[in-house]
Length: 289
Ligand code: FAD
Image 1 (cartoon, rainbow, N blue to C red):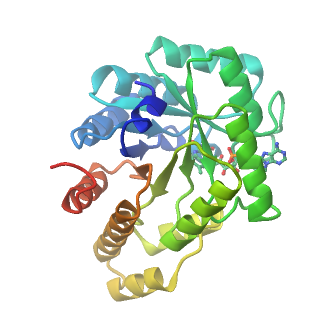
Image 2 (tube, protein in one colour):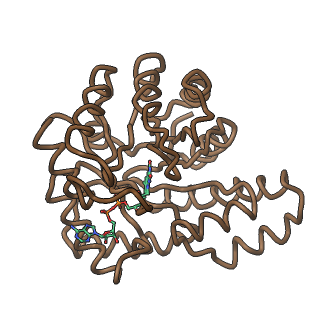
């Protein structure tokens, strides 16, 4: 099913899996997705070449497995730096052959050897996909704190509007740990005439090391409330993970109370983390029991 059609009738709930550096086989990913599907997400997204691993072939295969073998929908990510139109055509053909109707169109991070070929920015990719395959449902990324390269949040919003104008059907946010940043961003989107649904991405952090890495790679600020939780958790990895899940569930309940279009969980290949968020959202009435 097209994600835009789901968003048109309800608030959504979704998960993410990522095939890291080629060491998650299609079979393992399918097993994770099957466990996650038991929590009835509206879709599961599959990242593309995460961390520049070059592991792109598996994304289409895993998305097709999700689409074909579970009760949920797949959202296949696609980055365009270093890709030609022919590469994109082949990827979309593979997705469609496997029944996947949803793509998250991204530029990808800059890296040596990954230069712009046929696409410089995500809006180029969105436009190309919508022209080429009009019934494809195309999402795009947005950044409540501004993208790390953006000169200002306002400049970033103007480019975000360009993604909407190019035909993007919905947005997924970068992770953040302070909901107030998202509420301010949502108001700024209204002022910038960005009207497509915004699904909110939340990552339950699982360790101090991981949250530090995320802060540096995606520029998410870490509020004092998170630091205090991690200090209280001490050095025990299990306590740190517990603190991260508890914090994310609080964030999710607050977002649910404040009316969002959708909640997307960066579930990091962990069905138990995904499950904990489902339970929190049932408890607060966002999801039915
Ligand atoms: P763009 O929209 O192109 O924006 C990049 C920068 O360029 C911004 O600073 C923006 O302000 C500016 N800009 C945008 N359009 C223009 C324009 N027309 N002219 C000039 N400047 C412009 N990475 C992966 O490798 N694989 C993944 O699977 C993946 N999934 C992601 C999922 C989500 C929800 C998010 C938020 C990010 C994901 N990323 C992924 C990371 C993403 O690739 C990076 O954040 C990347 O640096 C920017 O991608 P973008 O699509 O937002 O790019």
